[in-house]
Length: 175
Ligand SMILES: C[S@@+](CC[C@H](N)C(=O)[O-])C[C@H]1O[C@@H](n2cnc3c(N)ncnc32)[C@H](O)[C@@H]1O
Image (cartoon, rainbow, N blue to C red; front, side):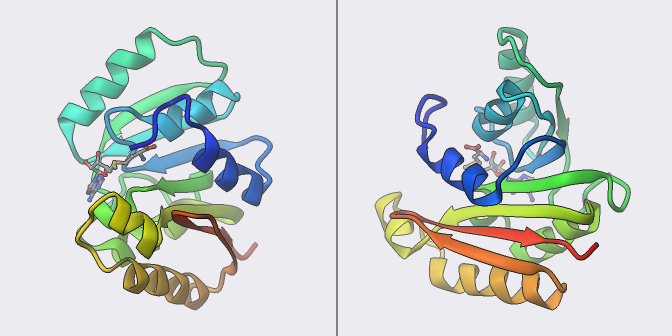
């Protein structure tokens, strides 16, 4: 997994989305909470969720030693059943987490639900090359196709960008 210093993948997604400010939800933040901290360093107010209590504990502990410009809150939650109101966030992100989630399309629907009208849903996930490199067993091409199909079905404007290892989705939720 990329380190906090290795910002290439994160910047690619943020640049593609042209993010400036807002209230962000990061699903499947992981114990490193790399994307979540990266955004909080830039001044975004970030809520990170993970279904693993160990990951949430690690993220909270490492937040104590950081000087973040924005707020950071870590919560234990399942991405397929988010404990937030409809439209609660300006931006909802999944960075390298969808392929870890058992029901990724359900998680995607939840991401759209908690994103405000006119907000953005951002996804970066491994393409077949990246999946092979990281020795993941999932069918990356199938997952990416399902993400794009569902995002379009939900009525979002979807822009995709391919990097060497990832496909990035910038989805604009209808206003
Ligand atoms: C590879 S890590 C994500 C890396 C992280 N987003 C980053 O910025 O580098 C994947 C995480 O997804 C979490 N996860 C898997 N299924 C989940 C679910 N249903 N709900 C929430 N988190 C989940 C795992 O516990 C794990 O911490």
